[in-house]
Image: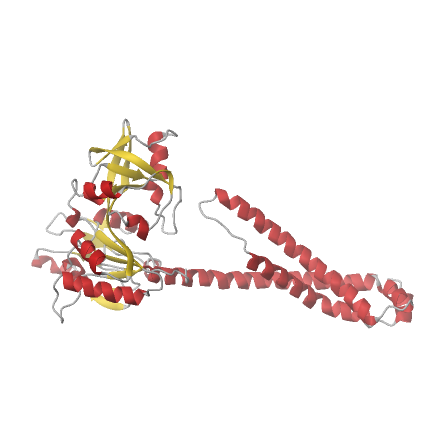
Amino acid sequence: MKRIKSALISVFHKDRLDEIAKLLKKFDIKIYSTGGTYDFIIGLGMEATTVESLTSYPSILGGRVKTLHPKVFGGILGRRDNKDDLNHFEEYEIPEGGNNYPWWKYWKRPEPKLNDLKEIQQRSTASEASAFMFEVQRTIKYRNNSIEDVSVLGISHDFDRVLSFNLEEGRYFTPLESQSGKNVAIIGNEIASNLFSGVSPIGKKIKVFGSKVEVIGVTEKEGEDLFGSSSDNQVILPVNYARNHIDIQNVGTTILVKAKQYVSNEELKDELVGILRSVRKLKPKAEDDFAINETSIIAQEFDAFFGVIGIVGWIVGGFSLLVGGFGIANIMFVSVRERTSQIGIQMSLGAKKFFILFQFLFEAVFLSLFGGFFGLLIIYILVLLSKNFPFSLHLTMVNIVIGISVSVGIGLIAGIVPSYIASRLDPVEAMRSTF
């Protein structure tokens, strides 16, 4: 992840309550309905450790809340119309990029519009591609089959250039289909399996928003990511078609921008800030009424997470190597003791101390290498089996070289003392040994 060459930056805003509810349910957080004048209230009564587990979870609040912070617990978040209900609120601020930012300012931000995308595409010189998208949950139907709570994405034409995905069958939208808003769709692999039961969905018509759309593509199966989300359960539509059935200004919209090669995140971010402030006619001293998220922030969280896993792996592996080294050393000590008379005979026949030392040292290294090769064989089998997993494993030449080098090193360290003792035996005393 550290070698991601292009920045993906999201400009987005506003809450999608159904998705928030699904996310919070995973952490046993309830959505409360007062039946009064509140638009919504989200209960965040939980242990601090539970909140910390949410810290690196990418928020789907559409730009209002980027991550949930360990300090945010035991309170409620909402919007009120009745001043008498003020005592129900516990005021706090939600952090963005390390700086506290009042939640009500997020709430006031306007949704990104297609016009914003148009201006970015026309003015930006640092971006390679940009796209507009939104996501809602809907029921999808095909004849007598239906699937509820399917993620329906409305996207602009360059979406695949920003966030690429592979098609198992069919094709992507043509520029004409995207521009005219034709009723065509690309569906996820699991949607295709559940609705069509092994029959090719290409050319078939499913119902989305109560209207028929023609399936022109099926994405490759990807499985769930670390956050439990999956593109296998998505239906993708041209945004110009989807906007005929839904008011996109009342859902969380997003603008995705991909930087050109060798353009840094900061360069792209500065350019986008300038363009959007100009488009929205903000005064010089006015605050930004939009937010810019960088996927590098998520990448940094992953780097830290896998860094900890790597450290733990080296510690556990170190103890395993220590135990293995003691095992090899013990074997070599026993071998020297059992072959003492043989060593004496070899020396009496002219064998040099260096030869005896090398002989036993070679045996120790061989034992260690045998274990190393056996471990690599197990890993190679797991790599072959991972083709059937939702994720893939890779055994690189660097890993192989490190494994062999560590095995040789452990053999040398474990065998040096027994080998040295064997090479320093007195030939006469060694031949008299009866062990």
